[in-house]
Length: 339
Image 1: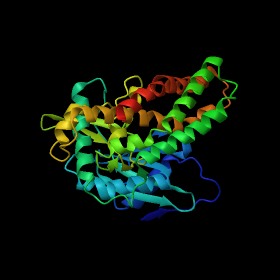
Image 2: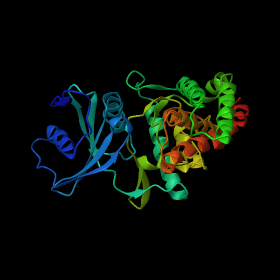
Image 3: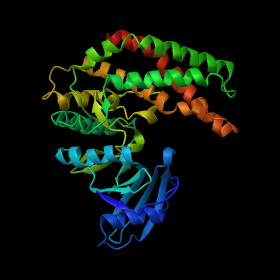
Image 4: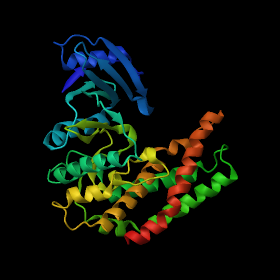
């Protein structure tokens, strides 16, 4: 484990120079990058930078909270090297002393942007996921990755319920918004009596490594040997648990899932998990959609405590309301199916 220089005071926004310093700590013998570009600045201080090296190779340097970086490093070091599927080259993790942040440096995921409506893309995603889930299930990684079984999503539901109940007083909410959120609260309360059913049903699929943020932004499509292959990245939310969330089939909010082809997935894992038939996998995918929605409602609950000042900002709140209306309203049908 390497460390870059300590900074006093609260964590500050990372600069391009910080990304270069992290890269030079990993490989001091290589020449400095010939160009660098910030790709994204996310919440909680995460930033992503692209470093182009003199030989034309590109490296992605991501700065994030150290706990998330530790999870990502565990996947790159303990999981991906064991897979028969294509993966990215991992250069290492650099911890910033005294800041609570770390850097993850990996090969850039070249290729085409994933299109969830493209049947060939969905098949490639399914093949990659089947390899991950089947091969990683044989690894003893529960001690190294966060638990993300059914109990994890139950916790997301309860946290989201508490945040929504507190957020009902937000002045930016319309009466119609409050009606939707109260329905979401009622649905969350209904789910409280169904988690045992979920757990029993999903026990048919062994626990394994899950990406847990298997969305369009974290996937690229490449052509290798006349075939399309998927490449996944951004593993800081990964864990050990049910594969359901990676198999989510969310059509109304396609950005939240890639809708991997379940028939292709089933064909790929049949030799390892022959007891899972097509009907089982469709139910797992539907539960994954529900879990993904619950996780998003939990992760994005800050939108209910925000003091909105503009129409652009209020669109964030509208997205949250839409997410709850379009998906949690159907939770009862999913519960009945899974039960």
